[in-house]
Image (cartoon, rainbow, N blue to C red):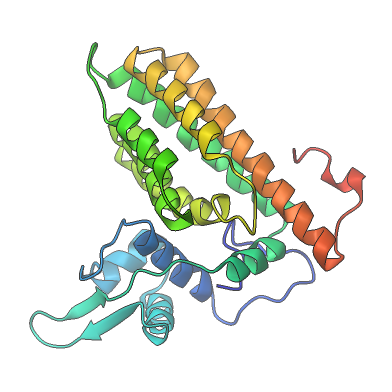
Amino acid sequence: MQQPLLGQTPSRGESTPAGPNVGGIAQRIASAISMGMLSVGERLPPEAELASQFGIAVATLRKALATLRAQGVVETRRGRNGGTFVVQAPFPSSEALQASLHATSLVALRDFFDEHAAVSGMAARLAAERTEPGRRTRLAEFAFQAREARNARERSMADSRFHFEVAVLSHSQRLLAAEQRLQSELSPFLWCEGVCHASAQLAFTEHLAITTAIEQQRAEEAQQLAVDHVRGNMRLIIDGKIALGRVRGTTRPAGALEGFR
């Protein structure tokens, strides 16, 4: 939990955990569980398949799973019906998120949000182009659920579901997989009050605007709204990083932030 989550690239001079991406892979699996992408009681895919999805060696994946077993998130069962199963849905603490954001460089943040804007923007555009005329989607339903969520974890899950549904409507498996990965990294930070001050009402308004553009097949507008939404999230996260830097006495000079906001 203590290493960078958004982009996985430490700032210069920061230490890197032992082992290639072990902590990052463990965190991404844990985030997928916390987002509801993997449910308690569900069996993880076979190790070879899961390692291929992350682009890592099976040995590295096994180290990540060992980390999750030590945290009580998963357990491995032997036998014909064995495998690695989810036994607990984790959600990172405010302290862990703050430490992770503090350790993530501004360059890594910008790289993350560049990718997110490209993925979310194209997903919204394709959703608008490929949604049948007059069809009512579930996007407004998910937008309302995110606004009415009672705590950070519920809002994080509901917010992610909205963006997953946009990607589903794009009919692109690659965009859906990318959106799931990006949301699992971003959403806990966005809705943690100790990290940034996201507005549920503003997010709701922006979600409804994206919904309307998609359902009315205004593809270019849907893409731009989605990109603007991501950029707004970027400003919130960077503001949170700057605030953490002030508290910890590591704020960068103002000129060093040019081009990042």
